[in-house]
Length: 513
Image (cartoon, rainbow, N blue to C red; front, top):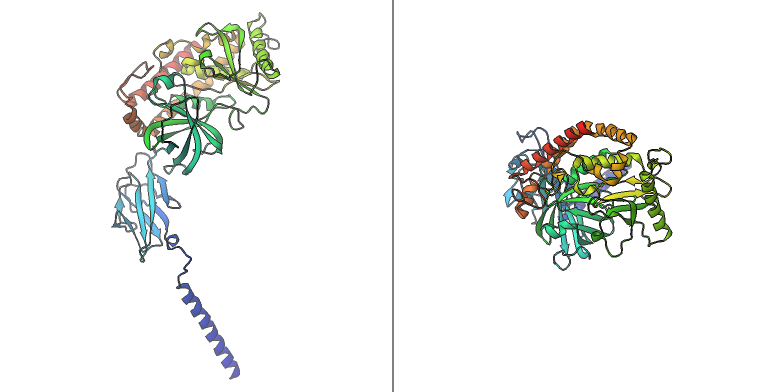
């Protein structure tokens, strides 16, 4: 009997504890934020309730943002969402939503409001991007004024809406200035350079401080630079800038589609020069800044103005006539001396002693294939070298006046040589060994011709909606913009001309190299 009494008390104790626990779970925690308990835990468009879908689209939930990407050419104006949540109900524009039943137009952002019986609410922004959607960049100057200088940075803030393609980038302080030469003076849509206080990772590209926003104003296709970079990725060049497209708002006003690229500069993630390497640019006197350090060689002249080549020392910071200055000046002049000599073909004591053959060949071919106007001997011609090593060409840069997009030279036409008329290359081609190397390497680029054409289609399709907004902002299609050689009435015709020009160019080079 005593054992039974103990056992009965034990059961009462357990029941009492369980009762307390159950009661405790129903007592609201005064410190708990009701809003935190409201959440959408899953969100998807299922094929079983959307007959136009071939497979499910499961969206990502990131705090109060829900985003995903729809298949290419798929209509998103009438889709049924399936979701789970912890609230009492969900409404869109005050219309009650039922998972797996209620449809909405997801062409633009849709706000889903989760409601609790006590009146608490929490809003989620649902963004379903089409394949062609682009990230949106917001740049706001601190004083809300225009960016009107290439020489001085202006303080601003920078943020990115990832459009469901990349993570959002929260607003951060940075600086911005204009960039470009003729394009800055002649074009309404300006290019920019931004500079962060510290290295930042934007658009899923490697971290760094400085980035270039190309306007691509005169290039109606918007992809000439991008296609040239794709050729760089196929090459033996040490480094080719990575890039992405984005739509840009400046001070809350839409400013168009931009091509964001890594800046050509010394960096472990860019032109890797360590502490001792050199980055040089062949440039023009009128483009030099007051503090630029440069030298001229004395053997060869460019075809632009008859002057001897001018080399701007971009990296490292040197002073006129110091030891580093003399080293790089003398190295380039020694190369030119060897190139000009009667024994220039000698593999041991001729020009080959001074240059990296593979980089000179690939740099030549990319610029010759594209018939890049400025790359013969004018500007944006980069070289780099490590002390004790050979001179390398590259990286490639600046192709907006390539692929037939110029009306003041023979570069408009897909036939004829152009870069080959550069003084260096003209002499190099007099060596059968160099010419043979070029022909051999051209066969490689020829074998990738279809791939480049596919890239043209890919990027044109990616930009087909964004270019419409860009054109609405700047009124480009169907209008002459310096220095267009041809003007078409549609974006599709501009792209087709680019493809046709490239194909004719490759055919001509195949016959004549």
